[in-house]
Image 1 (cartoon, rainbow, N blue to C red):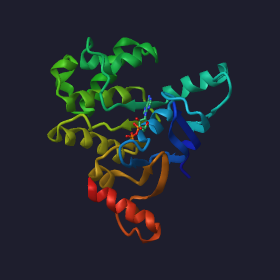
Image 2: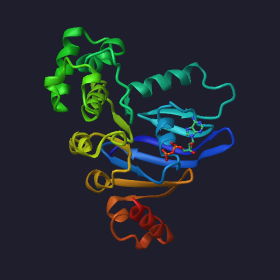
Image 3: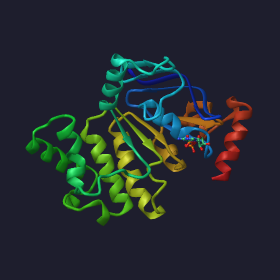
Length: 257
Ligand code: ADP
C-alpha cells in the first residue's frame, strides 16, 4: 500500500474580500503524479503555495510528509507547529514559474546552496552531488554559468536540480513552463517526465495538457476555488460520461486551450 504524502482537507483561503479557496480537499499518494488544471484565477497556485505554507490557509487541515497542521488557530502557529512547518518544507521542494535562482551564484552553486546551508553537507560531497544532478537534468556543461547567461529552459532545469538536491519526498511544480517560449518547454517537460517515470511524487499546476495526458496518474480540475473533479487521467481525457455535467465543463475548458 502506498503512503499518502499530501492530504489537504477543507482548505479555505481568503485574500481581503476575495475567497480564493473554498474548502479544498486533495490527496497525493507516494509515487503519484497529480496534475492540477483549471482556468486562470481558480486558485491553483494558491492551493499549491498553501501546501508548504508559503500561504497560510484560514482554515482546514494539512498533512504533508507525515506532518500535520491544523489551520485557523488564533494567534498563528505555536512553536511545535512552526517546527512541523520547517520539517515539512525540508521534505518537499517547490519549482516556481519564475525559477527563483540566485543571480550571483553559478548553476552549481545554486544547486548545492541548500545542501550546504540547510543540510550541512560537507562541501566536497555537496559538489559531487550537485554535479551529478546537473548531469541528470542535462546541464553538466553549464555548472559554472550564471543564471543571466542561461536560457529560461536551462534556468528551470537548474531549479529542478536544486529541488532534487534536497532529496524531497514530493515536488510541487507551479506552472513550471509558463514563462518559457514554446521551443524551450519540451526540455523542461522532458526532465519532469523522467522524474515521473522514476517514481517521484509530484503535484503539478500547469496548462500543459500534453504533459497531463502523458505523465499524470490523476487530474484535479479546479474552478472558483473548488475542486470540480478529481479523477484518473483516463477518465478526464477519455469517457467522461460518469462525470455528468462536469464533463461538459471540462470539454469547454479543453476546447478553449
Ligand atoms: P490560478 O493559479 O488558478 O490562476 P491563483 O491562486 O493564482 O489562481 O489566484 C486565485 C485568485 O486569488 C485570483 O483572483 C488572484 O487575483 C487572487 N490572489 C492570489 N494571490 C493573491 C494575493 N497575494 N493577494 C490578493 N489576491 C490574490
